[in-house]
Image 1: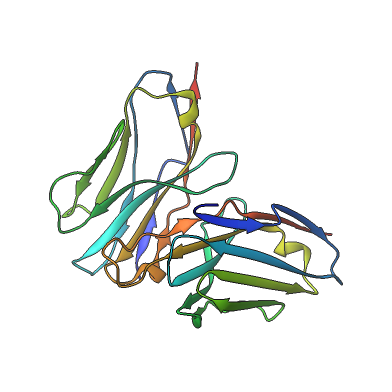
Image 2 (image 1 turned 180 degrees about the vertical axis):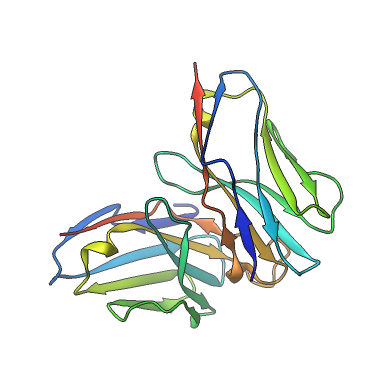
Length: 115
Length: 114
């Protein structure tokens, strides 16, 4: 069974600094998707970034980028120039290609941004 | 409205009550999902509907009864719940067989069972 592990229950960062959230996963599939979702106190689960496993290039969305290491099954999220609005729970998730119903989440990392 | 909407946002009910949660998606997707999110636990997938047909039921107790009348609407009917059922219930939708395999979530219903 696929599993997703987030080893950092909590992280903090100073405003304008950079922070990296870790995620590892386990799968025997070769083609899959990886996601980072953000859940602020408003509770809405928002898609931050998505990576397709067959693409070697790391995905980037504005201040958010990933470091995807397929062989190591690692998928970390880097947030640059952190803003107060980035404070939230961040969930790493995995699904096999063509299997969006099999989305598996990690337990989440709570990010605090200090002014 | 856009995206995925859920009503009500908050619900308090007694163990003998019957209530329903509603989810509506405006994204033209064909798959819809119910998740349960409890404190300090990963999201738990409860039900999956593909083209209105239920394709997953992750051993959910029968006191939770889903209904999907069409691809845009999903309900979760609740009856004789237990206090441990108190949680955030999230609805999501996706387009199966699409190229993105991405689920989009609603804002959730915070349920408290007294």
